[in-house]
Length: 382
Image (cartoon, rainbow, N blue to C red; front, side, top):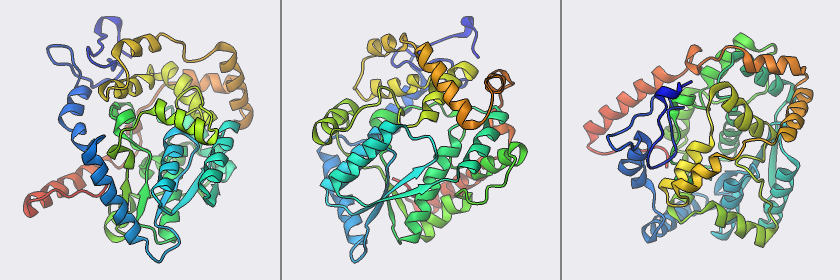
C-alpha cells in the first residue's frame, strides 16, 4: 500500500496511487484520463453516428441468424447492464439465447429481477447451475492463494459457459452489457484477466482439494484463436453506440417492468458484494468505487466533487458486514477464524502463479506484424 507521503490523486478523476503504476502529468492528470481522451473515446459513439453504426450491426446480427432459432446470445446476471441490454435486444427485434449462470451466490433480488426481465421480453431462460462443491473448492483455493481477483471463478465460468452455449447453438454474436460510459477506467495492475484459464488452473492445482470435473473453462487458444477466427464469433457491446446513463436505465426499468435497484454496484451477487466492499479495500487497499466513479466523471455523468463526496461514505454498515461475513462463512463451511486468517495472510499477485501473459505478448506482436504487412487494423472483438 502507498504511504501518506507518496499518496497522490488525479486532479480530473478520483483515481489515486492505490494503482501502483499510475502516473501523473505536470497538472496532476492521471494516465487513465489521458488514455480515455486519446484512445478509449475513439470507440465511444453516444450520438447519431453511433445510431447508424448500431443499426448496421443489428442488421448483420439478424442476417447471420436467418433460419436459426437464435441470432445472438446474451448473458443475464440480473445486474443493471445485462438487464438493460436484454430489454433493448427485445426492442430491436433480436432473438437472443438468454443464458444465466448460477454460481451459487445470487441474491433474492437478482432472481426476482431476472424473472421480471424474462417475463417482460418473453424470453426462454437457459440456466446453467455450476456444481456447488467445485465452485466452493475453487473459491477457497483463491482465498488461500491470497490474490486480489477473487471474482475470477465466478466471472470465468460465466463467460466460458456463454461461449460453450453459443458454439453448441451455432451462434456467432455475443451481446455484452460492457460499456465505456461506466467502465472506461480500470487499473489493470490490480489483477489479471478473468479469462486466464492458465492462472485459474495453476491456483486450483496448488490450493484446491478436488478436481474441476464439470467446471467450464476457456483456453488461451479457444479465446483468442478458435472462437474469433475459426468460429468467427464476435462480442458486440451495443451500449457503446448509444447514450447510456446508468441512473436513467434504472429508472426506465423500474417504471416499465418493476425492476428494483440493488443500492450498490454488483449487488446482484452476495459474493461480489463482500469481495468488492470488504475484501479488496481491507486486504489490498483497492476501492473499486474509484475506477467506477472515474469512468462516470470522464464520460460526463458525475462531477469530481460528487465522486469525492461519495467516497467519504462507508463501504459497509457494520451490522450488514457482520451478517454478510456470517452468511459467507456458513455457506463456504469455514469458521470466522479461518475467514479472518484469509484476510490477514500475506497477499499475492496473480503473476506469482502461471498465467497467459507471455502468450498475450506474443500474440500482440504477431498482430502488430500482420497489421503492418496488410496495411490495416485487425480487430477481433467489438
